[in-house]
Length: 145
Image (cartoon, rainbow, N blue to C red; front, side):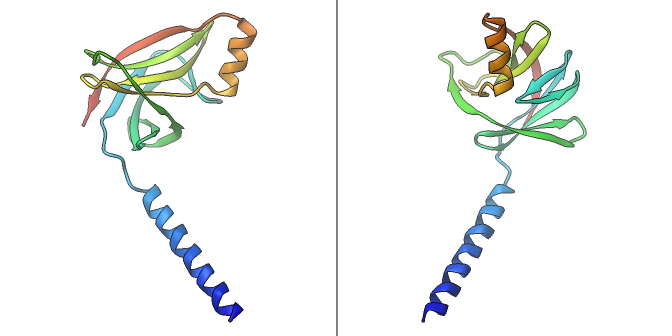
């Protein structure tokens, strides 16, 4: 009898893991934001060189940074933020501390809902050391549906 319960639990765990894997590979339908970033920048602790990138929604609160050729570089978790007025242009916002830039927000033209990225421990430490608020740098960009 105990053996049967163990097998059932194992089967249920397997079904749960399979469902989670299938869900994690589903693509969230949102606009792809293409941007030419003229400076080196960070997403969390990862540093990227200046260049052409795409931000592609993966899940409702996860954005994938890709090369323009579609090669995935990293995933970043975000939170939803709302603006009273919809932006007139698609904008990617960075926090700047001296010569270091960190991804902060993404806003899509005509949409009041944006994505904000939590400050990483690296960014928090830099802000603490400098003891000054960041300067926000906004890049107006194009997007594809």
